Length: 107
Image 1 (cartoon, rainbow, N blue to C red):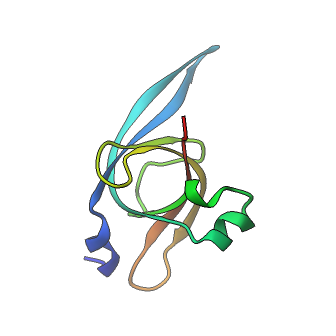
Image 2 (cartoon, rainbow, N blue to C red):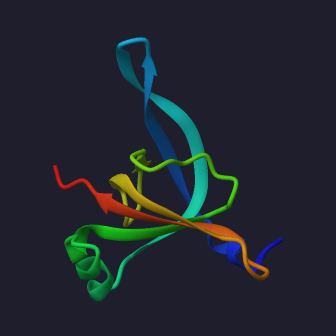
């Protein structure tokens, strides 16, 4: 087991827009375990987002997540809905993982 996997303690639900012909509907893509934390203020500023709304999620490299997906955390300190802005793959070394840059919905 990779060292980083011990931090995957938050259950996160994935929803995605699915298209059939000219009709779209949001559908569940399942859940995954990940680690979420708020980004640093300088990082949020560098990507043109507000600091209090910009978060990072780390998860397994095989996680079914795409740019634009909606991620929901049902409970805990980070409960809310987030939109995937960017996905980076890190497969170097002993801790392969995805790093997701997500923006929290404020509605």
